[in-house]
Length: 177
Image: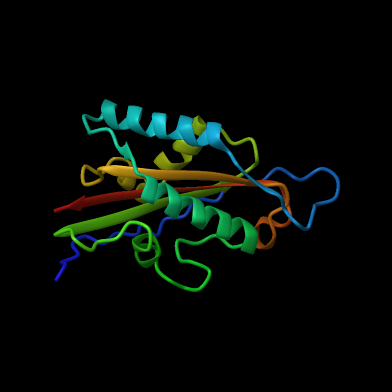
């Protein structure tokens, strides 16, 4: 039987002011990956951790997939939450991609944010650092891996008001055999 220790889903959320959209919103809300933002943000997270004497986080394909699926779902369905649209908790959702099975310990955490389509890595990191829960995740020595996905929607519905929006999910994890 696998023991799960330290399931963590930080409930802190960060909302960034949106810039008003110009022209009419496309109700289909075309999605695209903001790969430059993703790469720059992972680099800045690791630089921050190094400044604090913490180990760099390794990129995890499983956590990247979990983060991407969540950002895409929030963009398409117009909600902003650590829970899935169906109500599954952050830990349950991430475990579908980053399973605990076969490990003696397993722990995950998550940072989210959304903002204007041109939000940069420095601004995203500054917003997370200004939130105690997000800061704790960034500077936790327990994490070993990270998956990060930034998704841009040309017209995100629901809480995003049909505006162009970028949604970022950072999933943190640690597993030990």
